[in-house]
Length: 548
Image 1 (cartoon, rainbow, N blue to C red):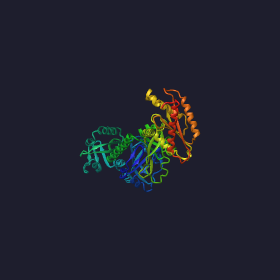
Image 2: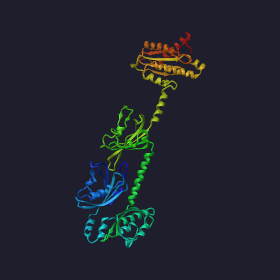
Image 3: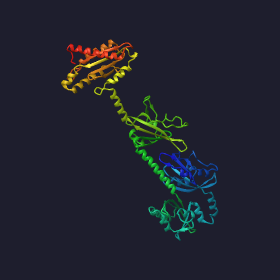
Image 4: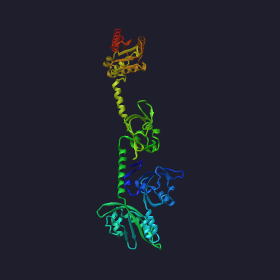
């Protein structure tokens, strides 16, 4: 299989042909504006025909004007769209051989060239040219089935190959036009009749590709060609032509079309983003999902380097990385398909998307890498949901501060000599129960959140603040001595008293403990801080300065 972004060729049919076949591809223009072609495939018979001096252009760049004369060039240059074809004879001066070239345009930028060696026929033609005009003309368009239409008799003489193609006995030597038209597929009759009428009236060559229905009901595709013949007086009296059964080729075309449509439909329907590039990393296909996620249209990026448009940010080092440049550094080594990777990519709108992505090479039949396919899945919603779950597992839902679980984990994580002296401070909101009873829990929650905001605004970034109970908070203060802790306690009490707003003033009971030596138990320090807080609360209550 030879693949390109727009066309697929099933090479099996070419490999089995008893004709030379080559596929030409054009990707650029010469300085003179001519299409520059490269032969990307030749079948074995093509090599055999041209083997004497290897008059080939495989892996070479060339223009058609380098090998064709002006008239031939005009015929081939006219092949502009899919389905256009032409046929002419070509003499290879280096090989001293005559070939019949049939050139077909299956898709823009491609030409399929079929070669028949007709050297012996040409020799015979030249020998009989003076004595038999009919035979000479017949050999000019020699094909698999030959026919000769005599207008005056309304009789068409055919050879054995023609009869065999039509499922007739080989002994049948002629038929009339009515017989022929009754065998043309009903959907093609009017078109074929019009083409024949136009050819006879204009005295121009006849060409038709249509279906024929055989006696057993089977349907075949044929390519039918003919040229008008005039007598010595210039009167049109015969048409000589050839007929080729192209059913297998048409079937192969249909299968290729269906295969391509299945692949195209699959790419369009999958929920993942898909981008394909050539060997140089130039983008040639983006499916609709990729367009939606990236914010770019396929036509906007066609031909641009993917590494110039997209960059990945990996969690391991948070550094921008090219998508392709580091994936396949050495094409000489065997490729192992990359495992699914996670990264971020920034889209056209400036949003960062979390994605899983895979990259795999696209190989030609000879194993050569033709390009790459990148498949990626947007997992941004999943990542955000996971982030929220992780946040809730370590944070208090009401205040956004760390919760008791996180505090105990941090307490033991920071319990090391490099954080000594290590102060643990426990705080309690005075009067929360009275606030809840008198004003409702909504006002009580407001007071809790006010306290949390107050504590966050009055501490260092490295300090860890957590809500460890309904009205109780704890602050971890690494590298904080007792005198400093006392200053912090004093400042917090003064600042809390100056807080405004709400139906209940902010009043705190604060206790702390300082771990000085590495041998002290951190849990004991936490308990001591908690006891000191309750001592302070009793002192406040005894002085009439707070309520429980």
